[in-house]
Length: 405
Image (cartoon, rainbow, N blue to C red; front, side):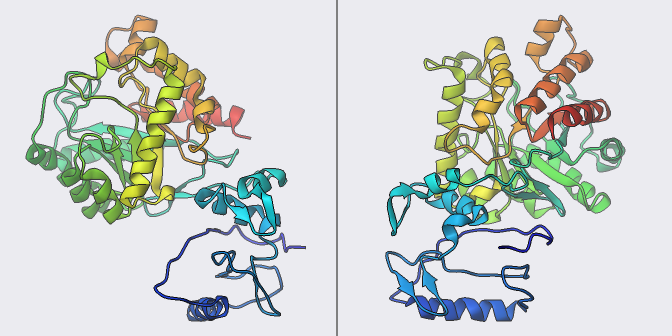
């Protein structure tokens, strides 16, 4: 029925609002005008074209003419239509099938294993969290801080001295450089906004000039730092608090339109170690609290396809809870309301690894970290945040070869 020999394409569904009344035929005319302006050329029926705008639904209206049918005749047979529609209104009801939701219709269709949500980052990068053959992205850690637990004091805020480290990370296979100027380890010292900006902005500027194709992430919970970083060349904001430590963060991300990592945590650096009680279990606790942050992000105007989630290993979690997250990551990925998001996992050299392996010094916890990276990839991690890029790229390649089929 459809032309299958065609390049990959992006399909999306959006809801539009207009002032006053517009008929379905008037709306169709406006859509055709947009297609013409974009140079649409139709080559074959049900085949590829550079742009194709269809009306799926128009309120509760129904229409059947030679040129237009509303609801769209083929919408219930197309996974590439129903899947993005269900991101908007999974519990919606088709006028002709009042006992079935759109989600029910989607689950009744045969699955296309190559279809995935798309979350962009950087100049060329994309996350494809539902693609079973996707390759794990490597986020390398670059802390411009004196007190981070593993590499604190190792990297200077002087761009010339730091660029050689970044170049090494890029050559070792990093997809994203995560630059931070404020340590979020438990009981870390407070740093002023001005000092944080002074640490990270010169590094971001130099990184963008010298490595135009690499993804750059700013690790901050402050909206001022996030905005300055994005305006100076960063692509991603990696926020350990998912907006809970700065009420202006989510509106700022919405304004910037950038990709945003929302991590689960409770409290702050001084209090989080005391906030690790989850009466209904850590997985349910994380899922329900992240769902609230996703809802807050969307309410603030952040596009759902710009969100990445992080369960926050080591943040308001004890050793057993960290291990449970790694064992049950697949459950989090499939939690109702959290499906289709990319997941970032950050275990690199953390204290729980040292407690299990007996390795006291954080910089020596490479082998324990490698085991957690393998487990995270088995569970569906899309991005792993690491200190040792060369070693963990090898680990991720091996794990991808085993699990990403």
